[in-house]
Length: 212
Length: 212
DNA sequence: GTATGTGAACTATTTCACAGCT
DNA sequence: AGCTGTGAAATAGTTCACATAC
Image 1: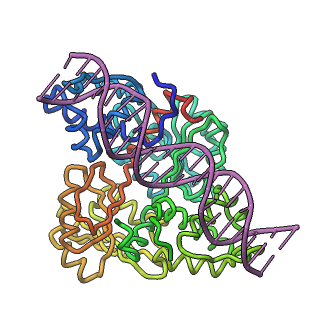
Image 2: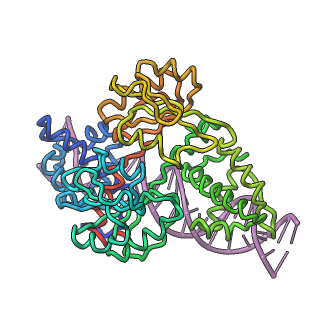
């Protein structure tokens, strides 16, 4: 285990490697070099080795990496060997889409509850996840052992929701509202600003030269 | 106009400044310093000035920036003063949510068409956007002057859809599929990997120390 | 006095390149 | 011979700090 600071981009790429390794295992490929694996995911061999290097030594000189071994090592590093429960706050179009989004459900992550301010929505069900009143957040988080919160409410309510989550003991938040949240140090927030991602493209239309 | 390479993160932040300036204009604030504006969006004054510096000199020493002027300057730089038409390919849960997502419609960007492989969906409507067969992409892109494509199909079909888009003349793609797309140099792809964003959080649950 | 614009310093991240292992 | 692991070099991005303008 290294002591150097690990870039967040490294963590993000490890999930890409893990996904590819899962595919490779399915087709019974036993061993792979950093060059081959890198090529499959459009990243350099050096990048891949450096990323893995933050966590230890998993390869064999001259031979490469054992697919299954590296896969389960990454699962352990990334916490994908444990089940995590997710709550979505804001059962609007985006929130309810995420609950049904196939990419969001996997054997490690499960959306187990939704919350909304609209009383008409409370009691509804999206798959296994019931919709609750936001006031019940703390109670439901405790009962359903929720670890991760997703915020899909309008920007003006996002901070309030984040405060509720923090009070309920949630330490990881994925925030889709376009607003900078203030949370205690121990809480990790990841922001996904969808309209900004889309808007950014208009810059490249005006400025085609930028894309190198 | 600078000649130095402009980081993509700068472009992304300009949209944040623009949003805040729009709010400031609404409440009749005429002038703002980089320190004040930076504080409102959780970024440093130096960062803000450096970002603007890539595009020119817009402030007044000792006084700060004129809100309305800077706002319209940024709109011009970012291409928000022109209308752009967007097509969504993949009218599944995510795709149709994005079409209804309030953050996605603004006076500069408009989703004007959707495409799907499922014949049962063709002819349906999401707001103003009709659903077409993917084979008609080129035709509809031409008719509706579509500039931007959004991919919300499963990973295994994403490259094929990207190829269709490129053939239809689309030069900006927002890709929600978790796969690295191969496109010609002149085409700009932005990837948004939602499940990776969510999964990344599980790493922080296993590794609370990481969040500094 | 106040706040910009910008080189220079610093920090973070990626790429290089090669010694050393199998 | 082939490929990893990793310091060192290169590149990218952020923050500092101050001369300059109002």
